Amino acid sequence: MKFFADTAEIQEIRDLAETGLLDGVTTNPSLVQKSGRDFVEVLREIVAVCDGPVSAEVVALDYDGMMAQAEKLRQVADNIAVKVPLTEAGLKACRTLSSQGTMVNVTLCFSAAQALLAAKAGATFISPFVGRHDDVGFSGMELISDIRLIYDNYDYETQILVASVRSPMHIVEAAKIGADVMTAPPKVIKQLYKHPLTDLGLEAFTKDWEATGQKL
Image (cartoon, rainbow, N blue to C red; front, side, top):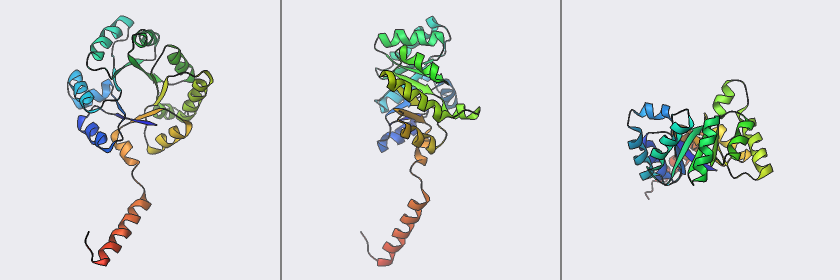
């Protein structure tokens, strides 16, 4: 499974890149707003650190507007994946962009039917939002399972990019299902390191080593 960082904070991206865990980055208007910085400037800094796909979202709602914004975004770097919403205009833009060789991330997916449409439109990535799906009483992981089954049935190349990840278990369950990618805030990715038995074992080993009186 590929690990993408869902953030627009450049230092968080650098920290993850140094661990070797970073395969890509996803951004959205809300994350850029939190950063308080110019969107294109942030993108240029991100692609300088991450050579994997970097998703940058259009904000227009119509096809012509999306295409105009996509042109500006893909000029930033070759590894920009233009993110479009799962709407009729968004899928039309997806089809055009993907036919031109541009990576496309279709976002705000909440049903297997929507995911099927995105694959047929040539999406590079489909982003089902598991956390938000759970919030309204549906199972985000069942959605991932349904999409995986459909894509495997027809050998679609669109990668399942699990988004709206809230916890390490979202990541583990998605990996068990066979999702291709997950994107999560860096703080959630770092929680994967944590286990109380690891901490207790390290504490015991440290005490035993100190008791030997040796230095290494």
